[in-house]
Length: 101
Image (cartoon, rainbow, N blue to C red):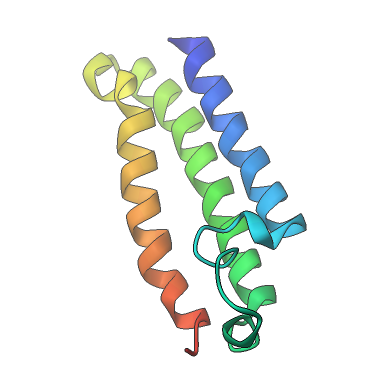
């Protein structure tokens, strides 16, 4: 489990940097028409998504080792699900403020 949590956490962090570098990786933005893309603050959105993915990745890694150290293995082993679902819900709700359509 140690390796899986570390790999998923690092994957999320890597995705954050990729989304910042290649904003078309953002779901929904890549399918918008050119007209609608003009009304999206892509610089702000891509930065927001990068920061969110990095936070999710760090939460997975740090949360796993913290709860493992505390002896709460059920939560430690669930950090991928908890951090990913919780983080993505928050990230997507907050991302709406960058779309002026």
